[in-house]
Amino acid sequence: QVQLQESGPGLVKPSETLSLTCSVSGGSISGFYWSWIRQPPGKGLDWIGYIYDSGSTNYNPSLKSRVTISADTSKNQFSLKLTSVTVADTAVYYCARVGDFSVKDWGQGTLVTVSS
Amino acid sequence: QSALTQPPSASGSLGQSVTISCTGTSSDVGGYNYVSWYQQYPGKAPKFMIYEVSKRPSGVPDRFSGSKSGNTASLTVSGLQAEDEAEYYCSSHAGSNNPVVFGGGTKLTVL
Image 1 (cartoon, rainbow over the protein chains, first blue to last red):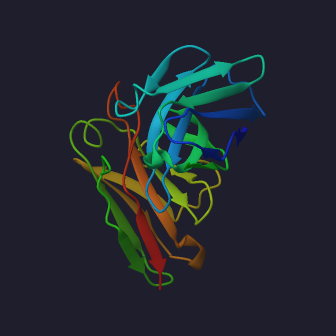
Image 2 (image 1 turned 60 degrees about the horizontal axis):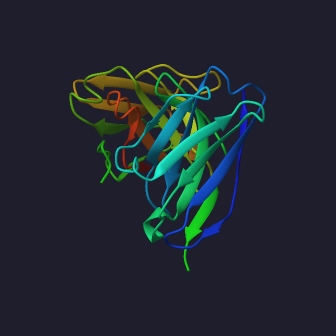
């Protein structure tokens, strides 16, 4: 079973770019789907998008214009960039491994607060 | 507003059974056998409990079972235990533009 660990700033200013990295251990990121999911405080889960291998991506239509997910197979990591953030983007951000449209392995999550 | 509809809360007594519903449309729950369920304790990451409607990953007790009828999927927890008290989320595949959509979550209370 793989282990996933999110890292990145816990505080981002409005209008700036949120950047997070997920480090994967216990297996290669090659050949699998890797995803970002977020959960606003006290609310439900929100699918952000996924990347397959280091290539193809698929994003939530509601976030598509602001999201980029990329991967670095040499570091066994994948990353999230969310531009033009607002307070509505404040959430716990999870990185995860996806298979057959199920989220099978989750990182512990990292809280990102958008505030000036 | 979540794509899939779950009741905000459910409850059951120790040892009894409880069923949580997850209602979608023919474009998600009803159209694919890719319904999953997750358990989440406060402050923790969700845990993968059920996939492809009714299959259990290794290590998940057989007290947890899933089913689907039409556009509604269900999670049944039998022989309720105190540690089953948690938030439960469903998800479904909803086509190439929406690989995964989630329900709003159901808070299960064990009485």
